[in-house]
Length: 353
Ligand SMILES: Nc1ncnc2c1ncn2[C@@H]1O[C@H](COP(=O)(O)OP(=O)(O)OP(=O)(O)O)[C@@H](O)[C@H]1O
Ligand SMILES: [Mg+2]
Image (cartoon, rainbow, N blue to C red):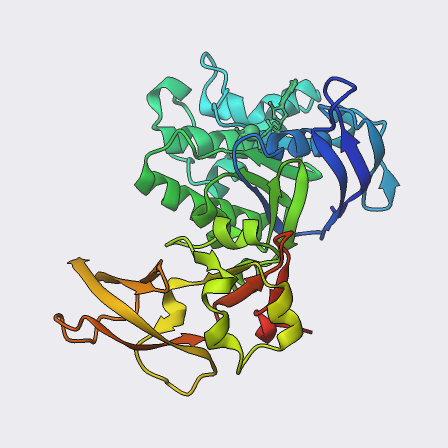
């Protein structure tokens, strides 16, 4: 089901707008993550999609139908929350079949459907257990199966993995992707974990301060962040930022003067600072001090000191350990300039249409 927001605003208190003029479209059959810092408006947006919360103004469409005034039941969404919220006294079979029981589907039929869904989410060997006898990951699988029982218009998941340990989170995010692809159900997934969002989504909506900072594929978010907020929010290690002023003298040859005049902040990804000109399009040569750091497993990092700024590079592993300074290069990929409002004004060209 395609979801469209047209100029949707939400105010909890009638004074302050928590969500401001949201406009977006989620294509049918895709998995979209809502990603952003705490308090950014992710859950509020999800609740507007589900119908649990009415929009203060604007319109919401499912397909071509205006559902703005319809409640959650009428919108037929399936939801999974952080807390599994399974019925503790019911077996897995009865938990999954529960929404169908509410719809008065006959027992034989709803059990058949429950068993199919249990197979889909890989808990078909747990059907007779109660939730208390399941692991956290298994409980979340059951919750997903239950949300799918009514063949929902959308599957909405609000931080479904945050109660799980790190290893299980990774396994379960892959499972959510698999289940979404096998069923084809349009899925909207809330997380504040960028790694999670980057790994499973077709598209990511970055939400902060109640507005959409950027809504695009994981690759575009990383390679062409629309603004300084997204550049800093997406990427590990965090992008280097420094006043553009500190770099200007080294950029005059490669950046138009009109852009340099507007540039307030430079963003340089750690892999964009390299020790050799590898012929892949360099934006600057810089002379900098070098301090290589210890290796943790395969990772090795270096701190460069340049015009009073410290820059982190992950590309210096091949240099002699005792080298203290040198000429280094900034690759065009991973180099950005932002204006005084934080908007991108240079870089990310490879994704231009
Ligand atoms: N029921 C409510 N009444 C009033 N204000 C609320 C209510 N729910 C959320 N807010 C406020 O709306 C803003 C957005 O909250 P929301 O829960 O959507 O954020 P979030 O992105 O889901 O954050 P988190 O990552 O912490 O879950 C916050 O400033 C929050 O304090
Ligand atoms: Mg939330």
